Length: 325
Image (cartoon, rainbow, N blue to C red; front, side, top):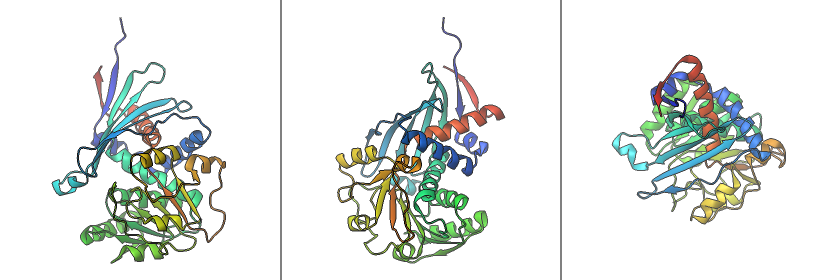
């Protein structure tokens, strides 16, 4: 007879109330990328379905033997949800016991997705941006714009922020919140060009488009600047990606998987991924004037690493609901 088995269910409010710090997530993801770079991880490219134009539902499995965590994120991204008053990204994370395969926890993925994405940008910037970077440019001022700025303030002395959004009111709301939360001065830019030309670190975080109409052109990114694109190549012309001295990604195999599916048609082949860069197998920034871009696709390993932090803190705090299997 099988012993009683249960899972810990954590709602969105549970996950948010646990409040794992961004600094802890950044540190955990840097260790994860080191494990990945040393081949101590298993993560197949994420398969997905696409119920409508530019909408997706993806399955994202991953396993980190050194951390002792395995799991899967079932995540959706529906751009049209904004008109419905619903989040663009939503999903669930399931954690499993690597020794038995039994599920141990099911939790909302919304907060985790936002935080781990910002943390991964901070890890990339730590190795690829100039260490004296102080001006951050955010293009698309939604959830990801906020989490990425939060993460970058944990790693850099950010003194000013340039913000652009097609919804000017959203950009002004972002500016006010950023000043209140992180004490930075935010200027709302009238064009994305101003953001890209003037920022030391640029983050683009709009919706992902399979057939994009890029905005950012060659010649905009300043010498010595670093950019992290979270929206595939949706907002960057192929010529803008091709002109930089270094183009990296968080996972080369995953980028090539998407290229085969019809994305990244004008994107050059990256020279390295973050696992190789964090371990030193491939070089990061080598000069102050290099222009570097990292295409962060979002990895299952980031999700399960962050979910593991949430799960253990929830256990220690007694948060969540235990449900029988």
